[in-house]
Image (cartoon, rainbow, N blue to C red):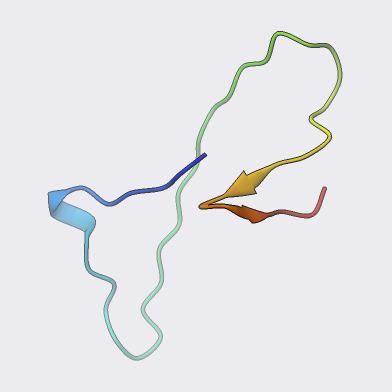
Length: 45
C-alpha cells in the first residue's frame, strides 16, 4: 500500500499535527497476511 495526499489534506499542521486514516483490503488467500508495508516500510504483524 502507498498512502498519498489529496488536495484538501496534503499538509499536516506543525507543533504536534497528526493525521489518521483507515482502509479496507480484500485478499484471495485464506488467513491473515504474513507481511505488510506502508510506503515501503514493513509493519509489525
